[in-house]
Image (cartoon, rainbow, N blue to C red; front, side, top):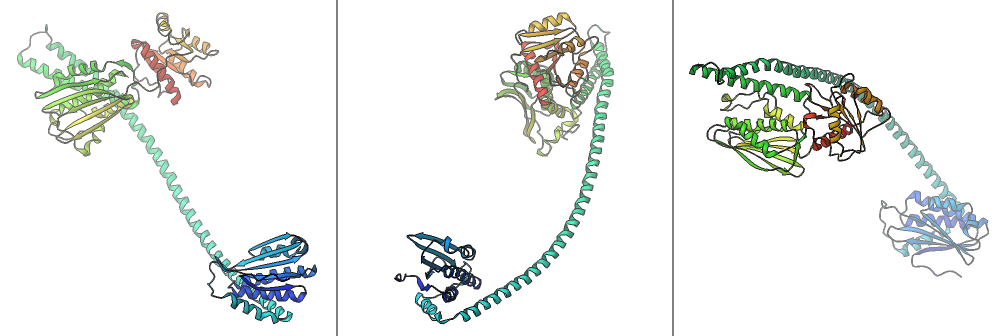
Length: 581
């Protein structure tokens, strides 16, 4: 019984003999051509049908073949082959794989002894659209049924010739592309060689430049070191005679000295004032040299901010000109732990500058807590600083030209020195100003120095050759650690450390025999002790001592400033130092 025709069916035929294979191949090719498949796809459809037909005929299986139109989304051809008998895998043992390669989609089913194979081939998105009616396609396919095997064989030969021509064309195109690619490769190789040579030449230039930069850096470091050494030496050499001049001038003008005439008294005062000014400049140079060389080591202690500001007010009151008021503002600063000497030097520099360049109005200083920082603000109503000079005033020896400059003395080092001290204390110094409107200087310092606050330790070792101080210090740190061991000299300390590692080592610097500096050098050379936190405890900071720069990596604690607070701060700094290095 012939199945009813479907709505999209173009043609149906029965395949039972070899002649049917030629007809099925012819119908497939003509149907593919009619719906607009490319010539190569037409050949693929015909070849797939030819292979499937041969397998069906050889197995003695009669099949019904339906050619169906796929209308959307792109026109395509579907071929459905059905037969009574075994499944496709048994009947189409050879052609199944070939068909899967040639067609877009191949599906097979087997139900109730009936096998079905459906293969589809669609037009591509770039194919030219075709207009046709289903009836016209049916009539066109029906008209081709008279073709015989010889005609189909001729068509196959023509397809083969077309394929060979197409293959030859592609071969020639491939040869042409290979030639172009070879030329391109040669150009790329030449370009790569040229770029490599240029890059190598550039690298040689860069290496030479780096070598020159390193040489200049070394020279600059040597010059800077020589400059710092010169400043330090010349400042020391100048300070002694200047101190003598100032001292002698004071003696001449002191009560009980031989009476002087009015003119002599005036001249002695001029000598004294000039000597003190010169001494201040020499001290400023020396302090700047120390700051640059890293020899200034902060000694943080809890300080009374208001007391510091009142002290500065008293010291500077005599320098304030008529018509200018020196005011102390808010001092809600809370607790501040820092180096008091350095803080005073910074604020004195800022206030002195403000007083020098203020003709009328006021100069004020205030301190307020700002989170984990303390902010000092120095304001004045003076002549101000031009915007383009705001950063340059921090350069060494730079002075802003103005009408008051001739009346004031200075080296141009004050603000540079103040900023270096602020950085040493872990803070920041900035200026805001407008010409003719006054200046505001802001100093921000951490409320507590970096390194933390150590409140409890497992064990400590105290090394000092003074038994009285050693016992007193041990008593003072009893609350800090439950286990405190002591050593009377450097050698005993090293023997103790050979079998015992404390949490922190308190080390006297000046000891007979093996001093603290030598002990530190030995410790830092040992892998197991190179990261041991060390606090150097000394009565005074020797000139030029820089524990960190010398590679000894230790905190510093002055014996004159020992308290529970300063000991904890020094221990915190010792831990911070070894963590940083």
